[in-house]
Length: 160
Image (cartoon, rainbow, N blue to C red; front, side, top):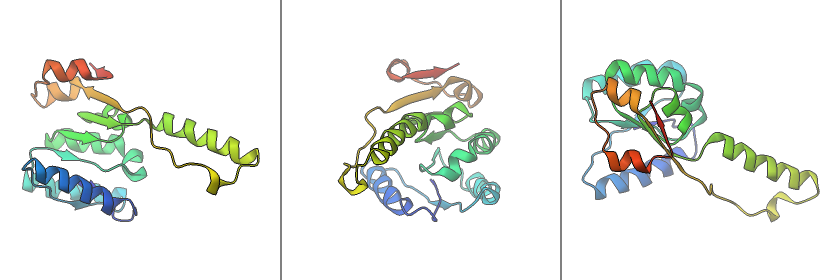
């Protein structure tokens, strides 16, 4: 699992992921990446450990480096799971989460309310209402992976 330890949400995300993985009998190894320059060494660590797959926590660093991460994942031949569809579009295997476009749209609605006089403390905290499953079949084929048909049928988008 790639995590940016500079992100305050990183530790709670890791704890939740680790608990879910443990309940499934999956061992999680954390690899911290603080900046883009550390990505090559993070993938060197993963190349040595040879995990079955890796996941990337939701973080602006990993969105901004989506192409580099996609290229490194392809070179190391590691299946990857992301929280943002933008990562799957850039070569990741699977993503499951909201889109940045939807989140920016929601932020704009909040900005509009605040500019019209609403107090931020009075606005409710909202979670994304739409979660997207995106599967990159080009990446699956490059990794010699077969994605089960039931999963493909559930996908919101399949990249071919």
